[in-house]
Image (tube, rainbow, N blue to C red):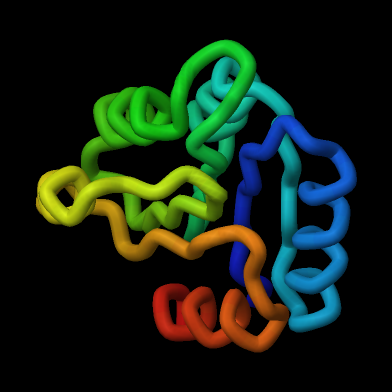
Length: 122
């Protein structure tokens, strides 16, 4: 069974590029372009992984993450940030305590993102 991933990213070019990379590896990928759209999709569908940009037009990725874990607290969904924004070690440690699995920095290499994602949703 294909693993289901949602990628919340406001840049459509980046979203489509990541979607292509992941679908070539056999993942089923949905896209959302705002935090609000991402929350709505997370409410109605069960995902194995949510990849979140930190800079979104309607909220931050951190706000989205915190809302998502409240919406489905017992969900099997794992969360990863994929962003150019750097978080402090303290912020990352706190978010990992709440369920964040990883933070991937943009720009990224295809091999890097695939290795991290495969390690999380193996």
